[in-house]
Image 1 (cartoon, rainbow, N blue to C red):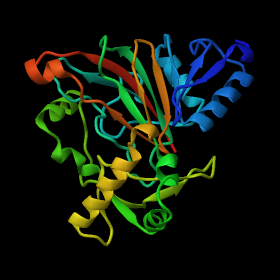
Image 2: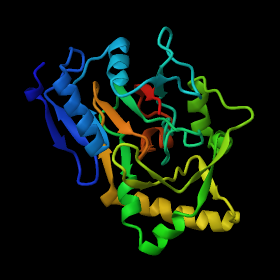
Image 3: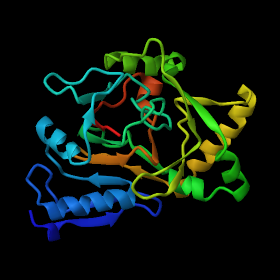
Length: 283
């Protein structure tokens, strides 16, 4: 496929771009891959529509952005250990990945990113939000930037102990595995992107609820303020899935959140089904 057929269309003013005129199931020339990599660096999240990928093609696409790794909390697909099926059943209120977070932020080196492919989605609902953490940092006051630049946050893989029942069912259905003992690691509240050199805020509310050297109450006050700031509407985009959609995001400077918006499941125990396939790109 010639490079000139590809078009990049910004998705929101904060982050994200739709990639048009490309079929990821077909071989792409190096010029096209160069443009995709540049768009990924610039926009942080790329969205593709109307793709029809086999597991092998999904893996091949993902590997163009880095080495892949297995997901630590769930079994991979048969024959494809680096691919995880993400399933929300009609009676489940909470989708896998709900709540603002950075994937595996408790690791020494959290993943570079992930590619999520939609197989079955509802006519409406089940959207995913993405937040630009560069903008979150850059729009803090000088005094707050100075403060967060000195602080470290404690990230804990033991997050699942506090899940509500509906979410626990969803994770059990995915054959979730948990670290024993849990992984607990402190990271600075800011980090520098290795490709762009830009600084971003590094919070991950689902995994992180404490700051080193602060009480629980002090930590909560500051972390809740930072989460509210980072997820202001002008810093995020909302992606509506269709079958065959792909989202590729940079986990080094983006938070994401699968919305808990299945009202039918919440009120009547009968909502929508959502089936996705995910690969994780190693840092």
